[in-house]
Length: 584
Image (cartoon, rainbow, N blue to C red; front, side, top):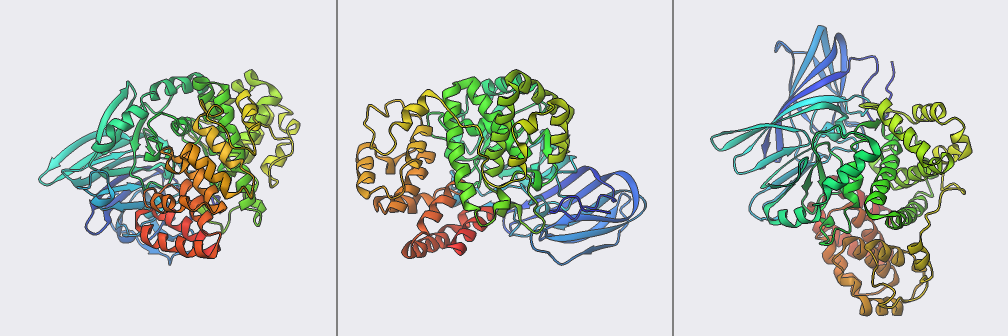
């Protein structure tokens, strides 16, 4: 008897779920889902079945014949939520739970019409990673156990429901509509995803379309029009795409991440709509997850780097194939900066800067950082350098093929590498990446001609000639390379020359505002106040609230802004900002 995932009540001696049938009515008035979940088990069983829940109101639990099953909903524990223990009768193969969600469900954000682009209809979306699916559905909320599912969402007739699954039909019944979806491939529960709102779609290619609010649709379609070429480039690198469609949903501004790799329907932040396709590497990242994460999944949050390190590596290979080595190396240089900041952030908890983490009693949202992304990428780059690209590409394809639709631990990964690339782990000192804190001394360093040119500009204000062909990545790097203690006069010159406080590229803007706030460049303050009310992406909220909180008067302002804007942020983002303010 063992709980193999520290973030789930699942016991490995109990039967596993094979499929889910989920029916939910969306109630915007009460901000609840009124739902029932039917879990079909891989084998019939008797005895206890432990399910993960968070803030669910359980109405009834019955077997496949509709007969009541005894159950106990335990008091909530920090991080995990409440265990729902169902006592199965001999031969039970199916369990149905009737319940409703809480208005404060941690996976859900309910937006008022005023918080949408159209301003006329409400909007709802889910974000289940890492362990928030349990606030929407009672299930075994661990990536160890993959499930197929069928779903019915009942919504107001004027709204559209979309899911990260195959569309199976819409039926209008009076003032309501029932939208049906089916996911035939088994997925980890954190990839359950849906959104409800006033949505429209535009085709991008034979396997892809973009969804968005009508007011945003044309901009989104233009920004993401190259997605089919990305899909073809990814297949050339990693093999056949197993999910049939790669559709995109442009989210409201409050979406907390750059993207979420939900199969068949990737969610994307609207901050990518820069107008020049300069930020679409996020799309490449989410597409890469179709192989690394969705197809081969980490067994728990303790092995998260297997999802994200592989995906960053795959993303940069896609970017290299489409835009060239120089651009890929610029992204790698930005990643290295992010990794250095993350290791500094966790200096009091250095164990969280190893790739193989031990997270009993640690909320995966609290442990979240760029470490699994960028340190994982460096390990894979080191292995590629050690064995050569052709050999590593062959290994990567064998790795993906051997573990399709499986969940993996770090230990299983290293065993596979040792079998396929004997001696490679020792050659790169993999232990320094996997089990030791910080950045290994011999980690690969990005190099390119453009990076060399940029390095020569460190410490001086560039001219218009210097920056005439800069990409947003170069602007970010330059700003992040500004030495600590750079004078306000330098920020004044930069702003007068390049109008960075008015930048329409969110990546450049946030890098600039964070640096300018730390330097005390006051014109950045007003733009920061406005911007924090416009976005909910944690990548932007964290550095800006952090920079504001660095001084006593800034901390007061940061708290005031958070009080004003908190309801615009997703619950995950609210908790992240609250943590920053409490530490400041």
